[in-house]
Length: 162
Image 1 (spheres, helix red, strand yellow):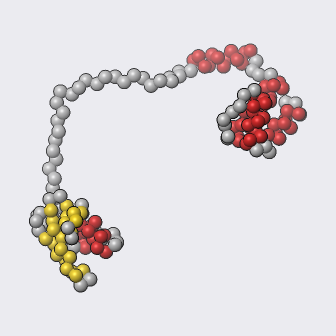
Image 2 (cartoon, helix red, strand yellow):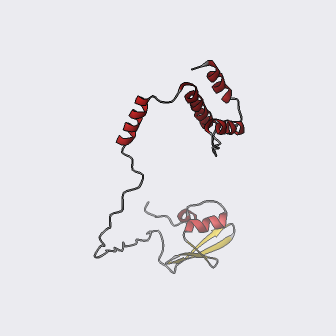
Image 3 (spheres, rainbow, N blue to C red):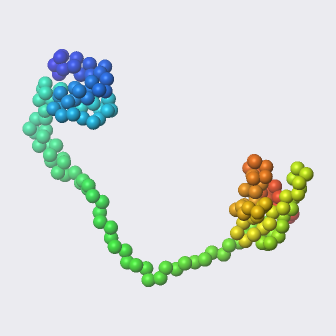
Protein backbone atom coordinates (compact mmCIF):
# COMPACT_ATOMS: atom_id res chain seq x y z
CA UNK A 1 0.00 0.00 0.00
CA UNK A 2 1.35 3.41 -0.86
CA UNK A 3 2.47 5.64 1.98
CA UNK A 4 0.04 8.44 1.10
CA UNK A 5 -2.93 6.04 1.17
CA UNK A 6 -1.77 4.66 4.53
CA UNK A 7 -1.57 8.20 5.98
CA UNK A 8 -4.97 9.08 4.54
CA UNK A 9 -6.52 5.96 6.10
CA UNK A 10 -4.90 6.70 9.47
CA UNK A 11 -6.31 10.23 9.32
CA UNK A 12 -9.84 8.86 8.93
CA UNK A 13 -9.89 7.78 12.59
CA UNK A 14 -9.57 11.40 13.71
CA UNK A 15 -12.47 12.70 11.61
CA UNK A 16 -15.93 13.32 13.01
CA UNK A 17 -18.90 11.36 11.73
CA UNK A 18 -20.11 14.32 9.65
CA UNK A 19 -16.67 14.73 8.06
CA UNK A 20 -16.57 10.98 7.36
CA UNK A 21 -19.94 11.21 5.65
CA UNK A 22 -18.59 14.03 3.46
CA UNK A 23 -15.49 11.96 2.65
CA UNK A 24 -17.73 8.98 1.82
CA UNK A 25 -19.67 11.14 -0.66
CA UNK A 26 -16.38 12.27 -2.26
CA UNK A 27 -14.98 8.76 -2.56
CA UNK A 28 -18.11 6.89 -3.60
CA UNK A 29 -19.86 9.66 -5.52
CA UNK A 30 -23.06 9.33 -3.49
CA UNK A 31 -24.27 10.35 -0.06
CA UNK A 32 -24.83 7.89 2.78
CA UNK A 33 -27.30 7.84 5.64
CA UNK A 34 -24.93 5.80 7.80
CA UNK A 35 -23.77 7.39 11.06
CA UNK A 36 -21.68 4.48 12.36
CA UNK A 37 -18.14 5.84 12.52
CA UNK A 38 -16.38 2.45 12.45
CA UNK A 39 -18.36 1.32 9.42
CA UNK A 40 -17.69 4.57 7.56
CA UNK A 41 -13.94 4.33 8.26
CA UNK A 42 -13.80 0.74 6.97
CA UNK A 43 -15.78 1.49 3.82
CA UNK A 44 -13.79 4.62 2.98
CA UNK A 45 -10.47 2.86 3.67
CA UNK A 46 -11.49 0.00 1.37
CA UNK A 47 -12.47 2.41 -1.38
CA UNK A 48 -9.22 4.38 -1.06
CA UNK A 49 -7.22 1.15 -1.38
CA UNK A 50 -9.25 0.07 -4.42
CA UNK A 51 -8.64 3.43 -6.08
CA UNK A 52 -4.91 3.31 -5.34
CA UNK A 53 -4.18 -0.34 -6.13
CA UNK A 54 -7.15 -1.60 -8.09
CA UNK A 55 -10.00 -3.87 -7.12
CA UNK A 56 -10.27 -7.61 -7.30
CA UNK A 57 -8.41 -9.40 -10.05
CA UNK A 58 -10.39 -11.05 -12.82
CA UNK A 59 -9.79 -14.41 -11.18
CA UNK A 60 -10.91 -13.08 -7.80
CA UNK A 61 -14.10 -11.65 -9.28
CA UNK A 62 -14.85 -14.94 -11.02
CA UNK A 63 -14.35 -16.90 -7.80
CA UNK A 64 -16.60 -14.49 -5.88
CA UNK A 65 -19.33 -14.95 -8.48
CA UNK A 66 -18.96 -18.75 -8.26
CA UNK A 67 -19.32 -18.63 -4.50
CA UNK A 68 -22.37 -16.39 -4.75
CA UNK A 69 -23.97 -18.78 -7.26
CA UNK A 70 -23.31 -21.78 -5.04
CA UNK A 71 -24.64 -20.09 -1.93
CA UNK A 72 -27.95 -21.48 -0.82
CA UNK A 73 -29.68 -18.17 -0.32
CA UNK A 74 -33.33 -18.12 0.56
CA UNK A 75 -34.69 -14.62 0.61
CA UNK A 76 -38.33 -15.57 1.12
CA UNK A 77 -39.66 -18.01 3.68
CA UNK A 78 -41.11 -21.25 2.34
CA UNK A 79 -44.84 -21.13 1.67
CA UNK A 80 -47.09 -22.28 4.47
CA UNK A 81 -48.54 -25.72 3.97
CA UNK A 82 -52.30 -25.69 4.36
CA UNK A 83 -53.33 -27.64 7.40
CA UNK A 84 -56.21 -30.00 7.21
CA UNK A 85 -58.97 -28.85 9.53
CA UNK A 86 -59.42 -31.08 12.51
CA UNK A 87 -62.69 -32.93 12.48
CA UNK A 88 -63.32 -32.52 16.16
CA UNK A 89 -61.47 -30.37 18.57
CA UNK A 90 -61.56 -32.12 21.86
CA UNK A 91 -61.82 -29.76 24.78
CA UNK A 92 -61.10 -31.33 28.08
CA UNK A 93 -62.18 -29.61 31.24
CA UNK A 94 -59.75 -30.26 34.03
CA UNK A 95 -61.23 -30.55 37.48
CA UNK A 96 -60.36 -27.64 39.72
CA UNK A 97 -59.37 -28.69 43.18
CA UNK A 98 -59.62 -25.82 45.61
CA UNK A 99 -56.95 -25.59 48.27
CA UNK A 100 -57.97 -27.78 51.19
CA UNK A 101 -56.97 -25.00 53.61
CA UNK A 102 -59.84 -22.85 52.30
CA UNK A 103 -63.31 -23.10 53.77
CA UNK A 104 -66.20 -23.46 51.30
CA UNK A 105 -67.62 -20.39 49.49
CA UNK A 106 -69.90 -18.31 51.70
CA UNK A 107 -67.72 -18.70 54.81
CA UNK A 108 -66.49 -15.57 56.54
CA UNK A 109 -62.90 -15.60 57.79
CA UNK A 110 -62.33 -13.29 60.76
CA UNK A 111 -59.01 -12.19 62.24
CA UNK A 112 -57.98 -9.55 64.76
CA UNK A 113 -55.29 -7.24 63.48
CA UNK A 114 -54.05 -4.10 65.29
CA UNK A 115 -57.15 -3.95 67.45
CA UNK A 116 -59.61 -4.33 64.55
CA UNK A 117 -61.52 -7.40 63.46
CA UNK A 118 -60.98 -8.09 59.76
CA UNK A 119 -63.68 -10.04 57.94
CA UNK A 120 -63.15 -11.70 54.56
CA UNK A 121 -65.89 -13.59 52.78
CA UNK A 122 -64.85 -16.61 50.70
CA UNK A 123 -66.50 -16.53 47.28
CA UNK A 124 -66.39 -18.94 44.36
CA UNK A 125 -64.59 -16.31 42.25
CA UNK A 126 -62.24 -14.93 44.90
CA UNK A 127 -62.37 -13.22 48.27
CA UNK A 128 -64.43 -10.21 49.29
CA UNK A 129 -63.00 -7.65 51.71
CA UNK A 130 -64.74 -4.33 52.40
CA UNK A 131 -66.95 -4.71 49.32
CA UNK A 132 -64.03 -5.34 46.96
CA UNK A 133 -63.28 -8.72 45.38
CA UNK A 134 -59.64 -9.86 45.43
CA UNK A 135 -58.11 -12.81 43.61
CA UNK A 136 -56.22 -14.11 46.63
CA UNK A 137 -55.85 -13.85 50.36
CA UNK A 138 -52.31 -12.59 49.81
CA UNK A 139 -53.69 -9.62 47.85
CA UNK A 140 -55.97 -8.76 50.78
CA UNK A 141 -53.10 -9.13 53.28
CA UNK A 142 -51.03 -6.74 51.17
CA UNK A 143 -53.91 -4.26 50.95
CA UNK A 144 -54.26 -4.33 54.75
CA UNK A 145 -50.59 -4.26 55.77
CA UNK A 146 -48.90 -2.66 52.76
CA UNK A 147 -46.39 -5.53 52.73
CA UNK A 148 -46.25 -8.86 50.98
CA UNK A 149 -47.62 -11.64 53.14
CA UNK A 150 -48.65 -15.20 52.56
CA UNK A 151 -52.44 -14.95 52.80
CA UNK A 152 -52.86 -18.36 54.43
CA UNK A 153 -50.36 -17.47 57.15
CA UNK A 154 -51.77 -13.97 57.65
CA UNK A 155 -55.31 -15.31 58.12
CA UNK A 156 -53.98 -18.33 60.06
CA UNK A 157 -55.40 -20.91 57.67
CA UNK A 158 -52.61 -23.44 58.02
CA UNK A 159 -53.10 -27.17 58.28
CA UNK A 160 -53.18 -28.45 61.81
CA UNK A 161 -51.68 -31.81 60.82
CA UNK A 162 -48.56 -30.30 59.25
